[in-house]
Each structure stands twice: as C-alpha cells, then as structure tokens.
Image (cartoon, rainbow, N blue to C red; front, top):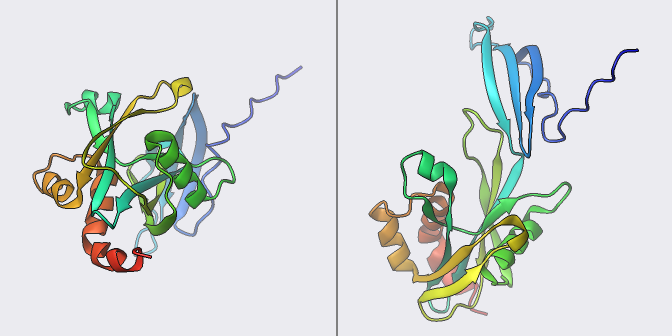
Length: 217
C-alpha cells in the first residue's frame, strides 16, 4: 500500500498561475514554523520568450503587520528594542530598535492585528489608526507582505517605559518613548537600522503636520 503524501505546509501553497510564470516544479523542502519552498520555473521576458530555467528557494512567512505609536499632543513616538538573532548573524548589533510588529493570523483583519501587536509589545492601545501602506520586505527570497499603520496613543515623558512581550513566545521588548525629532535624528544618523521602523518614521515625518491637526480632537 502506498503511503499518503504529507499535506503541504499551510503557508506554502503552490505559486498561483500568472501569464508571466512558467512553472516546472514546486515542492516544500522544509516544513518548520515557516516553510521553505523550492521552485523551478521560467518567466516570460518582455519580448515574450521564456527565460532560462531558474531554481529559487523561497521562504514562506505570509503577511505581517507593523504599527508606529504616535502622540500628536506631545509629538512623541514609542519604539521597542529586542534581541534579533538574524541581525547578529548579519554582523549587526543584536538588539534592534523597531516598531511593534507581528504576523497576521489566518483570516485576521490587518488593522485589528496591528492594534493587538501594539498592545502586546508596548501595553499601548491606539484609539485611532491610519494605514500607511503595504510593502514587500524581501521580495528576492521571501513572500512576506507587511501592512503598515500609524496609531494615536497617549505617551508619558520620554524615556524607558518598561518591559513587555509574550512570555510564552520568549519575547522581551523594551519600550522607549522619544520625541519625534530625536527619532528622526537617530534615523538620519543610521542608528535605526530596522527597515519597518525607518519606513514608518519617514512616513510620519511627511504626515505629522496633518495628523497633528486631524488627531487633536
């Protein structure tokens, strides 16, 4: 009797069809918390001819959310710091300064997920949220698509707000409250090296004058 094939990892479905995508094979090489998918394919070039045969390893993380907490009354932001093993492997300082972020659950509304992550990682509960946009983080090797938000919160004076994080997930996050100008100065000095925090702060740099008016009710 033939053994039944194992079900595919839920985060590694076959790549969807597209007129530019010419698949040869598609298999899951690793089915840990996140799947690693090995795909052999050609793509249709701009002149209509097929490309050379390519083999790509693709890390399947799914969708995520990120939220920048902002207090327009005091023009302060809240950022977090936590240990990141891949940063250490890349030769960076392992404690990264970031925005609250996390993965989107199956069928979960992105804005609600962003609010949840902000509360879990900082203890802050945004009462207003504005979408920033959706962006790919590493389209050369990973399918992760992030939903970016900015949320209105009430923040105390600048400094260390405390420690948070889900004990069950081994998290420890330090919450920092900074004047927006100082956070932007750190970004300009390349001291904030996390891309989601950088993009969120750059968006806020442009949009803060508007939010400072609209969010003052």
